[in-house]
Every structure is written in C-alpha cells, then in structure tokens.
Length: 123
Image (cartoon, rainbow, N blue to C red):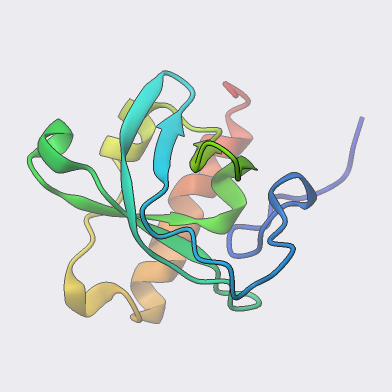
C-alpha cells in the first residue's frame, strides 16, 4: 500500500507538463463520467498549479477551478485533459468567483474539498 499523499496544487507525474510554457487553454476537460467543459486558464506555478474550466451550459455557465492534482493525464494530440473526479464532485466544489482565484482561504477550501474526494477512495 502506498503512503504517497495527494498533492492538490502540483501536477502528477502522469500529467507532468514537459514544457510549462505550453498552454492547455482551449483543451477539453473530461471527468470520469464525461465531458465537463473547456479550459479558460491554466497555470504551472509550483505549489499553485490549477485549471479554470468554463463548464458552459452544463452547470449554468459556472466556471470551476480544478487543482492540478486532480489531473490524471493530458492527451496532447487530442487536446484533452482527464481528471479523476466525477461530474457531481466537480459540480459540488466550492464556488469560484473572480475575487477568489488568488484568495488563500478559497484555495485552502478547494484543496481540502478535493482532498476529501480523493480520500474517500471512490476513484
């Protein structure tokens, strides 16, 4: 059994950004149970990497922030990003407002939320 702990804000080895200047903006995002939207913004900042996904009509135009640790893999050829959470887990995540993107308290809440979904082992 692995003692590795989940790291919310850094890319996993399986989704490593070989060139941090390569943009994921415009890539489609897929949860374990289907497409959720397109990437509006992506960062590769050490300890703060994340995606902002425009979910379009799926959840009424809401944008969601996904910590880089939720990314299972990136298909560079098909421009798709696969995350290891369900649509419902993403839909139920703490609401993202423009002011909260850089708010440490929001990032803590979001990291804790996705950490709990990881720890529940339903993945």
